[in-house]
Length: 423
Image 1: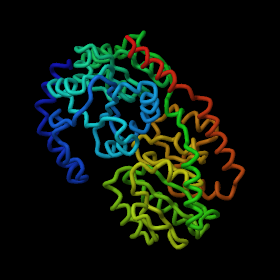
Image 2: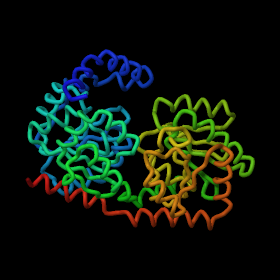
Image 3: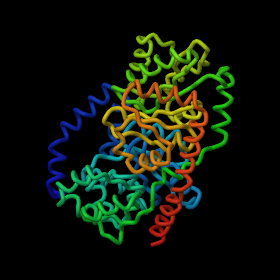
Image 4: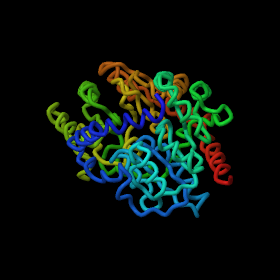
């Protein structure tokens, strides 16, 4: 498939795109708002001539945050425009940066929409986070002489096989990228095999290792636990959970309550549309549950705190003693394991970690990560860590050591971006 055929099929598929958007809006009403932006109509006022950063959703927005903060400091005269594709990503961008950046949705990958968007933003440089590759957007940048960076790039073997099936579309698209800053050598080789120019591919590492924890966050978490009277209470968190995982986690927590009746679970569903259903699930399971969004304090009789707010995940991790990272008991590929590790938490996950194979392997080999298969193993590991403080501290130290050993990717990425801006 070449780009012309891809564009034709995209146009023919627009009714299906509309139906999918309507279905999403039914589940999460925020999808019904700002629809015009998805076709490059009704874009907000934007000061042109800066840096355009695309972070498809929440995870990529979080990963991009250290880079964006550094760009704001190092290039204060350049406006930064951040685009995403989801309402949750939009909320996270606004929570992270407020008015310091410009923001809108990225239009669909139609040539006329991409052209209207670029005509409105007129960036000097485009930075795409991870592997959100859109042929028409990249081609329209190339036509205008706008350098495009694929930052913190990752490409699994499975994804590479998928791209390879459409080589006539993929190879020209990758050849139009100015620089691919990739996380590992194995991924670099996959990009080269798919058609990226070898001289444009550099292994810079993952900027997720360059996470810096604000001491004020740790202090705030300590103070809140003190307000709850929970300094000595065993607390664990299950974060970024997906459908099919909450039942497993609640079963583990009920088993833990038999061992430690004062145990508290902080349960954080990945998507806002699941906050209500998961709250009802907790209630049906007979667990006294308080919603974080209400601002009510957690009492000694509460068994679950539902993390139903946006932009607070690091703070909620800081409240806990042990962290389970979701999207991994089901075949979703997992979520960022480095956030709890950076906070010194022993990290648990399921076995489905194909989105984070390299990070998971490093944490596992260092002794900072333990994988579990079901509620029984989860119960055993959480309970064991509470009763074995030396083992918990060893995992704490191992996770921090992994982060320290792999830091520096952000500086390498920023250096490459600066060189492209100077061209």
